[in-house]
Every structure is written in structure tokens, then in C-alpha cells.
Amino acid sequence: MICEHLRPLEQAIIAAGARETFRGQAWSDNCREWVYFDCYIDTEAVSRTVKLPDCVTVHIHRGTHDGQERGFVCSDCHDAVMGGYEPVAGALIFRG
Image 1: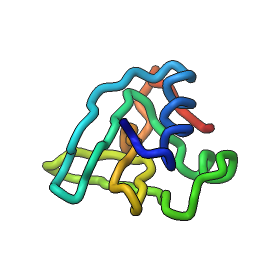
Image 2: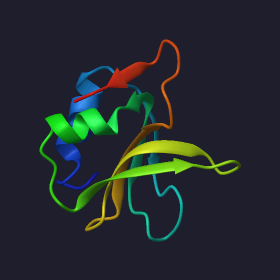
Image 3: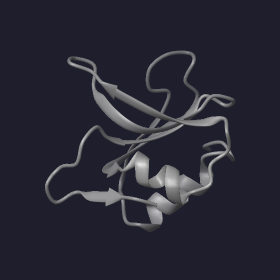
């Protein structure tokens, strides 16, 4: 189960209709539970509209061979909620 700091964001993304594509330890032992959704998370809009604790920060990774992602990570619990790196035609854009 994702940490309490990210749970409201995760629930809002699910309520918006995004489909979960992965849940688990994504990168390393420093990651606990990362949840990926088939949507683009507009991190700027979410940061303006959703009150997130200080331990939750924007995470953007544009990998060339190891995946691309954009979302939020909790530095206290090492959990994250991620979407695609950039919008994809026809995909949900979550703004909060």
C-alpha cells in the first residue's frame, strides 16, 4: 500500500479514470512502492491545485534507455506516483 502522503493523489488519479500499469519496487532498494499509471501527470498543475506534504516532490526522469516518467515521490517513505514523461495523444492528462 502506498504511503499516506501520496494516497490522496493516487486515489484522485484512479477516480479520474487512469489505469494502473505497475506497482512495486521500480528502481533500487531505495524505492519502496512506486505506482505507475497510463496517464500524463501535469505536475505543475497538480502542485498548484493539490496540497501535498513537504516530503512529496516532483520527480522527472527522461531516460534514454531506462524508461521515462513524471510524477511525485515521497522522500520520507520512498514511495511514488508516476505517469508518462510527456502527454500522449488520446491519453488522460491528470491536472488534479
